[in-house]
Image (cartoon, rainbow, N blue to C red; front, top):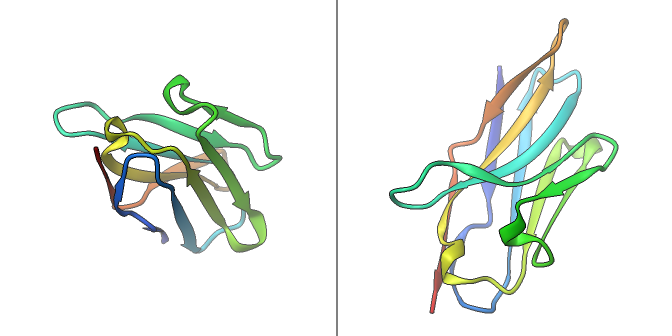
Length: 119
């Protein structure tokens, strides 16, 4: 079984920074894409950023230039550096990983970490 555990959330003021981490553990032969999603109160979960195993990245327009996603393949860990945070970034942030299986891959999710940005 595979588990994803996020850390690094918290309460910050607008303009400050946070760094989220997500470590995958368990029976892992490899990880394809890893990413971060977020869900604000009353809204659907949406993409923040994703990164492929080779390092290709894609960001939501709302976070481009402020957030940076990275990963350490040796540690099965993905990071999200969040700078210049805004109140509208307040949400529960979820880690996602597509884990390699014998045929294809399977998506796993973390339980989420809360980020609150005060104005």
